[in-house]
Image (cartoon, rainbow, N blue to C red; front, side, top):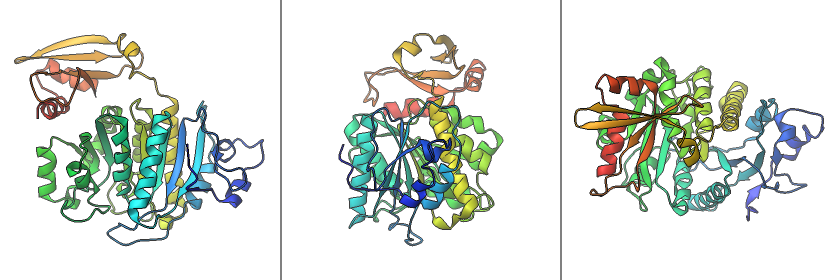
Length: 384
């Protein structure tokens, strides 16, 4: 794997963790250094990469560096993990933004093919477009989850920006996007046209208040995701110095969402975007803890997304009107799924019956003759 375009982690920062007796993450993470070069990726589970690109921020470009957030991350102690973590250093700005995209897209694709989860510490959120395009070579439909106060659909007739990358994903070939889920949108930051478009596309959107009231609502959504992106601006301004809004997720809530992303068996890439150095010491520590909770989640994956695991699931059938909804429950984790039937007579995007993650509440509501909304949307997307 040719990764010569990556710049190493700051040598002075790495020197703080050269004592082999240290148990902090800084002594455990295999980092790209100016002395020893890129780390061996054999057996690596998660690879961190910084991307110093934010030229397409609608509010203006800033100089990016990730030393402060790395120092916060490296200072933390790991849990009782069996993970092998690498820090690949940074992708510098290319001559053009497209050059940065090309480098990130190629890196994500290479890592995912090696079953290594890339964790992107990024500048502007339009980098999610490159993260998504990496799946072009992976021959799969993509479920994209974005934790953000805005949908970022934007005007697809205009050049891509950090507030219009989703629109570009929707309208640009190849069409790999099966579903998009927004977590934590705030209505006053989104036009009614965008909200209605989300409905017409059968995308999922969860208001901030819904999640504040019931954060566990998001676990099944994350369980179905292939890639996850998080806008740091989704955190409220009291938790992070450069927060976009006085309303938003607090530190505990956003860390819970990060852990849900990590524990999902299907999530194969994860990005934190809209990082700005001016977030201050508290902000950098929060970003470091977001990464820590993602690692924690990855460590505790149960690998239930396998054929052998599904054979052990308990099956439940619930008749509703003309439908028979089929639910499955894992006897190991207690998690639930609902089956989306394969309909060969329609122009279907699915190739076989598919299990959609759901909650026990969805099963109980179905028993009361209420069809789960996520099942309905997934079935409708499969039919068009």
